[in-house]
Structures are given as C-alpha cells and as structure tokens.
Image (cartoon, rainbow, N blue to C red):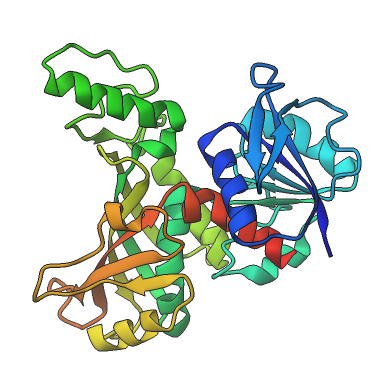
Length: 332
C-alpha cells in the first residue's frame, strides 16, 4: 500500500540520502512532503524526475501523513514527533531523542525486526556506530552468546553532518597549501588528524558516543548483562565508519565457523584477502548497503579459543542512518 511520506530535515546529509534511497528502492509513495527549517523553505529539490519544494516544518506539517522519516536533531524530534503521531503518522526517528525510552523500540532490521510491532507511533533508529557494529556481531551472538565486546571506532566526518564533511575538504586544502584553518563544525582540525569523538566526555572518561554503543547494543540485543567497552575516535575520512572489534564468546569460536556464519548473514559482505592484504576500507564501504567485514582471526590473548578479532567498515550516512530507517519503514 502506498504511503504519504514526510521527510523532516530533508536538506541535511541524511535527509538527502532518504531521498536517494526512496527512489532507488522504489518505496511505495502516494505523496512525498519535504520539510526543513525556515531557512530552507521554498528551496526546489529534485525527486524521481519531479521538482518538489521544501516546506517549513511547523505544527500543521503532518496532516494526512502516514510515515515520517526524521533526521533534524533531538530537540526538533522531541517537539514534532508527538505531533506527527497525534495526526496518525508513524515516525522513524534518526536522532537520539527516543533511543533509550523503554516505550520506544530501537531497531536494526537485521537484528530485532520483531520489536517494530511494539511501537506506539515512534520507532528509534540507533546511533550509526552501533548499527554498523551490530549487523555483523549479532549473527555471531545468536550462535554463540557473547560475553564481552571491546570496540575501537574510526569515525568519518559525516557523523558530524554535512558542514563537517565540507570542513574536512576545506581543511585538507588549507593544510596542503600551508594556510591556517580554524574549524567550526568540529572541535579540532579534521585534516591529517585524529581525535576523541566530538561528544561530551563524562567524569569517568567515556564520551557520549561510547556510552551510546554499549547502552543501545544492550537494548537491541535484549541483554543487559552484555559487557561492552568502546573508544570512539574521529578520523579524516569522509563518510564511512570503521571499527576494530574484539569479541569474547561463551564457548570457543573458530575462525572458520565465524566466516561461515558471516557469509550467510544479512547485510554483511566478507572482504578478507590475506594474501593480497585486502580488507575492509572506508572508501569501498562508501555508498554500499552492506557492512564490509574482514581481518577475521583468533584472538591469541585468549588461549581458550573464545576470542575473535575483526575489522569492519560501513557507510555512516547510508546503513548507519538513512538506509536503516528506510528498511524499518519497509517492514512497517
């Protein structure tokens, strides 16, 4: 059945990806409404060969809308998602506003699609680094329950928005030309640099991105006892996140068994050519639906055979945000 769809935050990087995916995946649309702030109202945008006009988001934007794909910041979602639900729409929200609300399902379609059925009008899209990790980790966890995950992330500029992506380009050009450059979207220069993820650091030394990874994964896996620690770092990559993941299983897990499981897992593509030193790279993960998984090997520090290492890359804007939300909408 065709749906009347509204995109909130359509002019942002994720909003633009929503448009691309709805067309590429032939989503059944009865109508499409483009919503953004007053600054973008009136802007023409192309979709499927037609010219649409961006409208200003307000309390009357959701009349007649069945589905809202939202990615315009947590405070915007907190204000407008309940209004959309009151008008009869289902909201798939890509912000952090509702992720840890016990009444709101937090969904990765390859992991917990059944949770969608418990929604009361809002479904939360997880954090990008959480999604990218969970797609390959979950199929292993189903077969051999995981006791502990240690993950280090290498996160692209896209996670901080379109302005940060442009800042990476401009800062790189300035550095190559020997000019000074003052960043605005990010706290430090992104070009030729790496630094702690640009989210608030708590008294315990963990930043907010790291907290999201363990809190959200426990909720998605329905496993409050799962032990996770994370170190999240921003690197000079445009739009695909990478992660080094160390896993401790309940029982021994051989490299061959892990490969067999991942080879059949939805949303995963194994890229693991040791002979040619060819493994997941953010450049090759960009614009792909799948999470690339490689460097699959036994953890030599765990002689009981329960440890496994792997390295993954996934497009932050696509599967880490827009695609995951559109997949949820398709399941709806």
